[in-house]
Image (cartoon, rainbow, N blue to C red; front, top):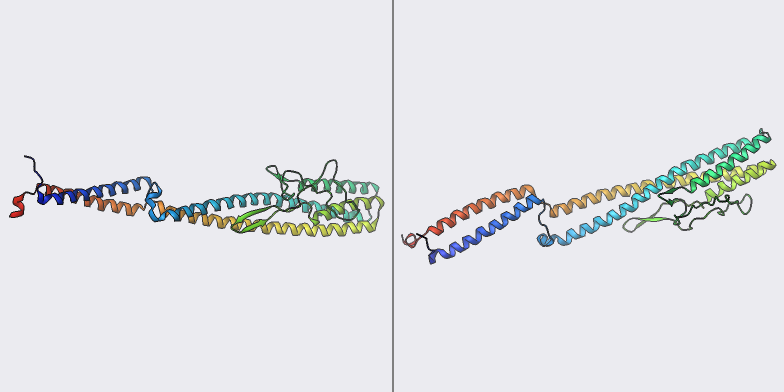
Length: 307
């Protein structure tokens, strides 16, 4: 015989059905969180965390853009720094050859060899200043698509012998900068028209001219100019090292901040497995109790109330 719900049990029955329906929904939701690893699969489930989450995502995208800029800057600076090491070495070789030439112990054949050596060194210096990375030249300022030092048909000589100028330079007069972080631009490039390079090129040209006539005064002037240029090259190298350290430190900060923000964002949407498992156990207990209560309520008769 089918048990008919009595008026006295109807409200209890309906409320109980509503309760275990809600618990079933909550249980399914938590089980979904555990299986997916996320508290929600849409913004609606984030409630008041939406603004914070989107703000974190925006910050992480901006940091990634800065890191891309800084990483590119580090690569370019490292390549330019290696070229500078070779430029300094070649300049030191020219100074050693010029010192020997000034000693006056060389014969005519040695003098010719000296001129050929330093001219070859000049070509090597121009080649190093035309170093490129991925097709982008490093010593030409913002003009990265053209070799900054003219070598064809030859490297231009100073307009006035013994006077440094940038007649050989074909790059930009603007420096290359990158946005490394908020409100922080870094100028990290070295241009081939720097005074130090001008002095080295002019000193080589003057030394060849003076060597042909054995002009000791001009040879001395060439040596002074070359030494001054070498000092400038060493200063440039030191500045490059400082910029490289600065960029690497900024990149490390970006790494740490990005990982931190990623963790915060993950906490907003990731499921707390321990808490979720505990909640499942609680919901299952409530659900079992609700089913038992419903079974009892469903079997009640009027006589049970009047006993």
